[in-house]
Image (cartoon, rainbow, N blue to C red; front, side, top):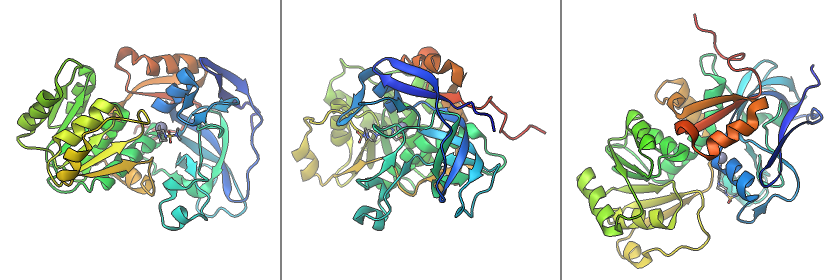
Amino acid sequence: MSSDNLTAILYGIEDIRLEQRPIPNIKDDQVLLRMDSIGICGSDVHYLVHGRIGEFILQKPMVMGHESSGVVHKVGKSVTHLKVGDRVAIEPGVPCRYCENCKQGKYNLCPGMIFCATPPVDGNLTRYYAHAADFCFKLPDHVTMEEGSLLEPLSVGIHACRRANIGLGTKVLILGAGPIGLSVLISALSMGAGGIIITDILDERLKLAKELGATHTLIVSRDLKEEDLVKKVHDILGTAPDVSIDCSGLEATNRLALLATKSAGCVVIVGCGPPDVKIPLISALTREIDIRGVFRYCNDYPAALALVSSGKINVKKMMTHHFDMEETKKAFDTARYNRDGAIKVIIHCTPRDENNPKPF
Ligand code: 572
Ligand code: ZN
């Protein structure tokens, strides 16, 4: 085995370094992975720029990355479902398995969750990485390593749509056409949504949303009045949405979601924005709107993999940029400044395509 374990480490604000780290030892229930593809998430960029997300503060150097795939290099003694050479998608959060939330099947809410690249836990933007084997999902031969890494944001999309109970004919408003908004879009389509309007401030993102199957798009700008936006959504969709899913996490989008949704509908808010927001709560309550949160995902990787491997969902269009690991800083700049229409930027810790299905 090569002793090269080049690793991308965040030392502090605006300070990513590529350094060698020791290759980790594995526990009996773990596998050692030769890492392949890692997508850059908004949270990675946020830690780089701000050094914190809410109460999660970078207090010591942390390895970046949590949207990943790799190839099994070694298996722990008690691992039975994986073997050396298996290509896997890595679910990056491993819960305690013993708390009440874990026992009730809501392991995403486990207070003891160990989640990659969330301080103080290291991520997996590295060449070799040890992970719980049962949080690794074997990829069928025809699924690429990049697609494997995109199962992570796709799982967020699936979880949000499951929380919203999207089904046949559901009319959906999605706020934000970044990677999570687009993941929600393709998940909602696969679940039978009948009419989807998606908003963003960037036209190029909406163009991609249209290509991915959005029925309608709406460009928003700060100078548009809230009630005018609500009216536009209703006019374009032909009715009020049954469900609104906010993937922007801004006060303005929280508000628009609540105001636009039909009575007895559901508003799902993904991720986090400012800790305190001013929302039209009474209007929402007196119209019996269900407001639901989304925290990452839980038991959603299998569905994400099934959708990608069956061809029902195409995540390839979301991957806009590819970089080798040595170009990590450039990759982060591209993601951070949305350079050249960047949506999902992928870093390759193994040369691109080395582990991918070969064309016939
Ligand atoms: O891919 C999962 C994911 N989750 C995000 C952000 C990015 N990627 N969340 C938003 C931030 N929260 S948090 O609770 N936190 C920093 C742990 O504020 C987690 C979910
Ligand atoms: Zn993420």
